[in-house]
Amino acid sequence: QVQLVESGGGLVQAGGSLRLSCAASGLILSSYCMGWFRQAPGKERESVAAISRSGGNTYYADSVKGRFTISRDNAKNTVYLQMNTLKPEDTAVYYCAADLTGYRAVSVTEREYDYWGQGTQVTVSS
Image 1 (cartoon, rainbow, N blue to C red):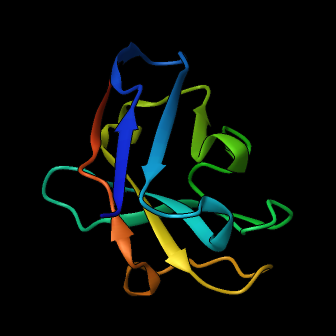
Image 2 (image 1 turned 120 degrees about the horizontal axis):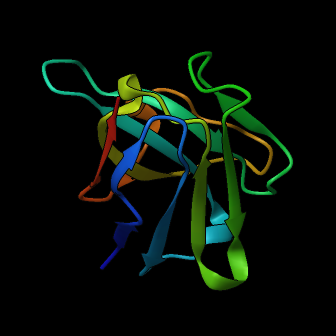
């Protein structure tokens, strides 16, 4: 049974940092492109970042470029999202997702992903 479990969310002041983790079980992480998505209240879920199986290719939404960094440790079956210079508009539930795809591919859209975590809340106060 595949499980993706996010952790590291919380309440932080604007300008602060958080590091989200996504621990995967029941799958071999190196076989999957991994992505982070977020959903703010009243809004649709949106892609934040993604990283290829190799780790060599990444994608970032324009709204987080230069502030967020996605990384992965396939040996630990874990993906990370380092979030710096947080803004109130970053407040959302953050989800990690796994997509079984090609070695260098980076998946951006929700429909490409096969497995999802339950999410972790990130709240940024002004």
